[in-house]
Image (cartoon, rainbow, N blue to C red; front, side, top):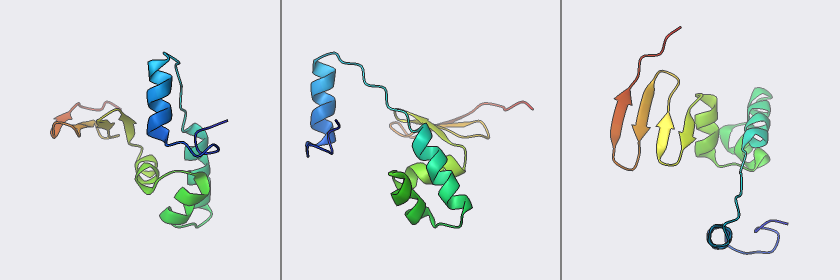
Length: 95
């Protein structure tokens, strides 16, 4: 059972699991696949995000092959953007 089913804010659940030292692994792979499938069938970004249970920003990132970890966004062209500090680093991409 998840936080949404029992109407508890996600931040509260996250705090409780962290305090209890419970490791929660969240995978967006299923959402990403569903979002991209919906986009390929002609759905708008907004429709596809709603249908996949994701937000539009994540959907846009998935379309552009941008990976995200904490406050860092890793672009396919080698750019690494630290959103917290506003620093962009370039790493050459081979291939």
